[in-house]
Amino acid sequence: MLAELDKRLLRTLRTRGHSEEAELAMKALGTAGEWGIVWVAIGGGGAALDGRRRRRWLRAAAVAPAAVGVNYLVKLAVRRPRPKLRRLPPLAGAPSELSFPSAHATSSLAAATAMGRVESRTRPALLALAVAICVTRPYLGMHYPSDVLAGAALGCLLGASVPGLGEPDAEERLIDLVANGQPR
Image 1 (cartoon, rainbow, N blue to C red):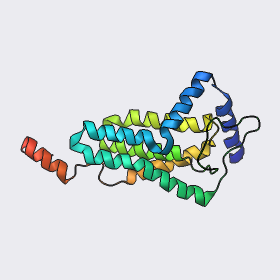
Image 2 (spheres, rainbow, N blue to C red):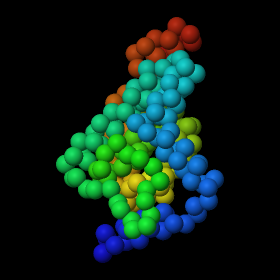
Image 3 (tube, helix red, strand yellow):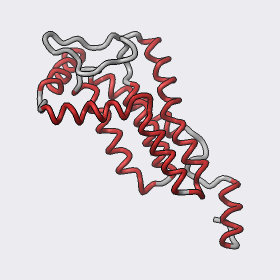
């Protein structure tokens, strides 16, 4: 029953709202999410703009590619093949034939969760981008919706488990002490 629902949702996402412009936008978002590249760029930007929390931004940026690695280990254990819908080929390519869980979802939610811990005001925008990247996967026919949900859950867990992102480290406290005469 769940497998049938998964396939119905996939078919719906793969067949509804498919203008040329929408498909181009989804492909661009999917490409940005490959290997966590967009998240590394965002983390690098955060590090460049927020020198006081540079180390935390860089640590959070590293979460995305690390999450891809963890995701691949799960894919190898589960070995679920990518979906195949009759007369609806996928609209993008993939580095493997393994589907569960979605690496885009894992890396996106891991990075958005981690970076949101560095600067809470960025959380809504980061999560919106992560969700948009997640939606591209079934829309393009690359993953079942359950692949995306599992990847998102794994990503949230990974992003929440990285130590030291939400509080200042010793270097930050020293910078505050020198700059303000008192620690945070």
